[in-house]
Amino acid sequence: MKHIFIAGNWKSNKTIGESAAWVAGFKEKSIALEGKWEALTTVVCVPSLSMQTVKEALTAAALPVAVASQNVSAYDEGAYTGEVTGKMVKEVADWVIIGHSERRKYFGETDEILKNKVEKAKAAGLKVIYCVPDDATVVPPGVDVVGYEPVWAIGTGKTDSPENANSVVSNIKSKTGAAIVIYGGSVTADNVATFVAQPAIDGVLPGGASLDPEKYIRLLAAAVSNP
Ligand code: PGA
Image (cartoon, rainbow, N blue to C red; front, side, top):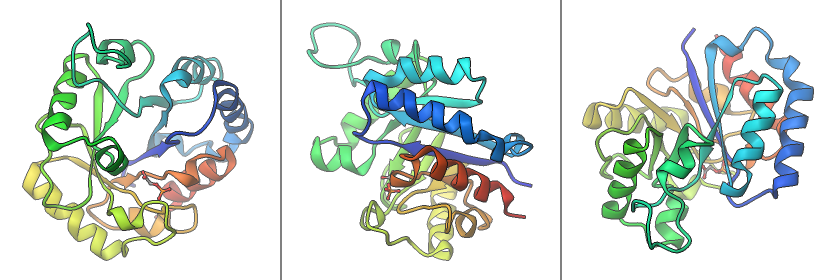
């Protein structure tokens, strides 16, 4: 059975208290994943303010779920008001998502800025999930996982077809040499198996379907139940 990588992206949702409640809910239902963990690497991409709480709660509950930041500074520490550096993130998370289309669209992050962010994240020892909307977008060197996320499929309930996603993912792999490439855009427990059944697709990046811990567990279980 192939190993599946799943990164749940909460986006700008959940207070610290709501984040702790998510972990408690996840723990309560995690029996559904018994015997399935070996086939799975899963990460939750949480707001910066919740990272420490989520990490501590996951550790206390002995859940093999890693924490990811949704952002990192393109600069080192210093006079950059409001920024959270890779070194700060690394104390509480192992991963960071860079290049999400919402960062490109709403926060003006260009390929150049994103490349700097990848460099800073890697220098801090973080593993990087780098999102691209297609197979033509530049992927900076050193990223660990690439996420193919067509913009029109994000949060719309419309997915790419598994076959087309597989062909874009294959192109990304051959162009960039990336070993792990995942698909994102309206992935749910009901459709995840069709994506991970594709030969080139190594996993998924669900947003909305990661917000409820029970739904997220159903999605994880469905992904690794696929023969
Ligand atoms: P969605 O989000 O699953 O809610 O479409 C995916 C993403 O933006 O990462």
